[in-house]
Length: 278
Image (cartoon, rainbow, N blue to C red; front, top):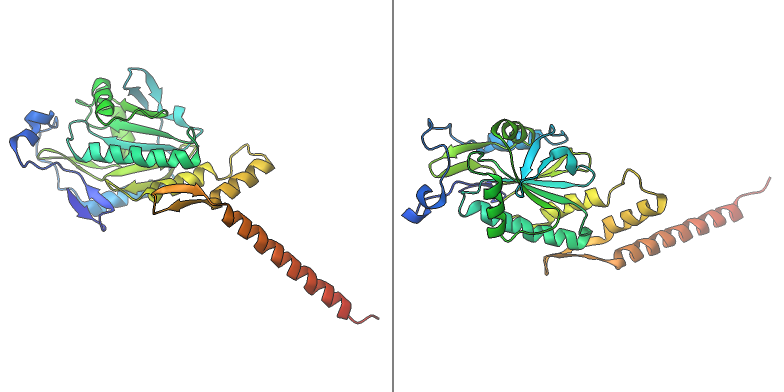
């Protein structure tokens, strides 16, 4: 694994420190007999990743770990977090997935249990079958509702990784790639990219909070006001690594606005009192 941009940007490439960590013990990658891949360029990968912001990935047919099929477009209507992994990765991808699960639990506690969805897709298509994805989910103990593990055929996967700005290349014992979680809005457009194996909780929760408590397309006036209050009053507590609703922010805002209104009233009244009469 190589470090880039102050540890926020990480490249996953499992090293071999003992024979048990090699491809024979972990399934390896399916590319070892292929020609050597070009060197991984972190700066170019980041540019490609950031270049898709605001764009909507094309629809794609996926197979979930339980064998049922689903389209990427089926996830529209709520924010979606897409994470790409490969199941033969023995350290980086499991750690990334476990950390994502931890942050997802924190986000749902603050935003609502059904406020967003998560989709983990295996990009090593010969090996990342629905059965392998199901096994990976069990091994990482990820059983959160609204979180799917899925596979795709090679053509679909090629299109999908291009659309979400995810580059990966075969390496000696795995793949070189950015550790990237892609946040899509309710309309299926890419809203944010989050990098790192163990990123800070707000890096993912804040964009989700903006999407969940932003202006819903069918919100009433009261719902809109309520969501705005939640947006500004749901704050991160670094001491507990949790989010909480801080009423004092709302109360302080109301008091501040009331005070400003009173001052404006007094100023206008005094101006009218002193205004010369004709």
